[in-house]
Length: 211
Image (cartoon, rainbow, N blue to C red; front, side, top):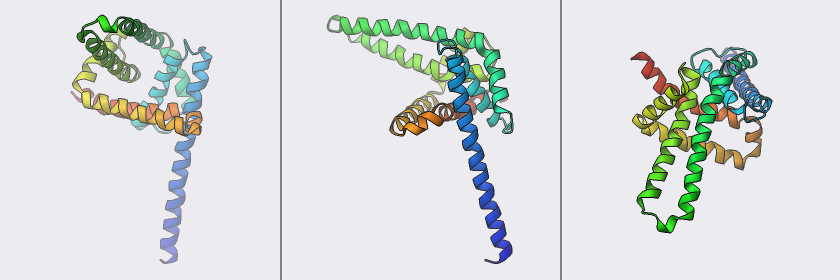
């Protein structure tokens, strides 16, 4: 390898390291913002708009806007989505609460119930999970009412069932890995989850937008 080739190789290597370091910093910052703004809303009012804002930043990255000011963009989306994001989040939380009460009832009367009842419950639980998986990316990408997002999430989630299942499995794997590596939770769990989460969703949204 002559001197010129070595310089090109060295420059390329340094450039690659610089890009890696840049993205690590971006992901760590986005993770920190999710935590801070969730706490800013005392969790009960902060976690939902913070999640949508995190997905919103990832959305801009995937649309080619990789040099955005992360904090400024996050804060803008957080404020815009604070009311409607909490509306979506608390409707889903309410549905989850009803499902939990049904689960406790099935546990209490399990021996007296037909097998159809627990089967129907777990089917509803699966559909509920699908709605959650799709509702927040939809909220970050489209403007619509809370119940329209829930309806669209159910329709897309069922018609794209393979993507739904892949998203659930991948996010579960990230959470499991994070429990094995506590440092990942501290610096990257939320931003990494958002990146993977929206990556799956964005593939479908692009197809829908072209129709």
